[in-house]
Length: 422
Ligand code: AMP
Ligand code: GLY
Image 1: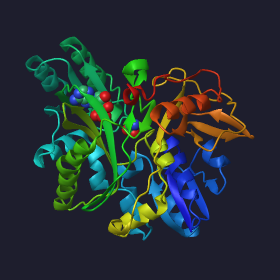
Image 2: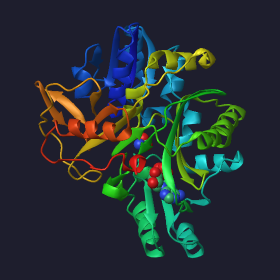
Image 3: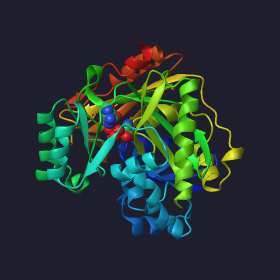
Image 4: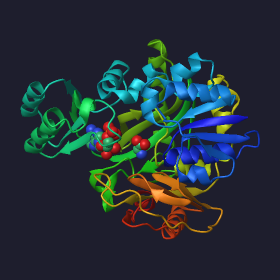
């Protein structure tokens, strides 16, 4: 069978690479893909924009695509799943209504309250004046979030009122996040340790994926600006059995039941970003997709078929699917381009390793293939990922792989995994 992956990041390289391992899969197309997907066996890039519904529909019909896996949030929030399913094309991803869990912070916060899901206290505002007034009534630090999609960058942590006023100015007056900032959520600052919980969900059935932890800040020791994620590892020891049970009971089950009662049952990867402290948890956010870079270390550990998993979810057969993980640890280190997450250079030629061992995998993210050369094209350029018997070994190997890649202005954090090792 032929399948199609939508997107062009490191997550999509990993989704396509894993799907291509199935014997039943003859070819994986990626719309539009990157240099990494272009260079893989059994994977073909298609130069169609990830948000072009009609062109994607036509391509699926022409190539008899048996499964579409949508990677990024944008097409999901725009309703690509509804559109393709409406044309009879098997598509793995939530409906537009369910994707609002990520598409609007106000929607998701209101949803948490309605269904008793633990989260930080908050208020939401459509205009500068009332938001500014609210700042006089709260304690600091506080957290200000653009309501809409902002590529993981729409959250500003403000240690005092002056910073909060500056944040409101940049969102409402300077429109730093464009339309996504036409509304803001102001919420209580939570302390604790963050973890990602990602599951495959189909209506009221859930298959939790291996646990993981991301490193969102650009700088060592988790300081500096927030990014889409600078590296991740799996499993995450902070999610022990007790916390795992709590996440399923207090977060996932009420969310799935809430969506069913609202008439928009969930299908797809569902990602809860959590803050954990003293055995208690609160949801920071939901993402309606797999995490990037969490996908890369998680899929490196997946031994069973990803394609069968997605098809079982679509066909409401998750009960009969059994997921298998390698009894290993994995670590993925993002190699970014100087300046990221702000302005960064592109079109730098990359030197790639000629070969590396089987327990390593270099996933491409912001790369493109031009005249046989691999050039950078994004802020996060690669995720160097490796397996080990413990996290320390996985980390050491991931950094060995990092050192085999070079381009002008490349940088990476040197401490990915430290929270799991300490
Ligand atoms: P979000 O997109 O809502 O997950 O926010 C991005 C990042 O901002 C999170 O991964 C946290 O590091 C941080 N963050 C978000 N909300 C809070 C909060 N209420 N308290 C502390 N940190 C937060
Ligand atoms: N790594 C965080 C995210 O995918 O949103």
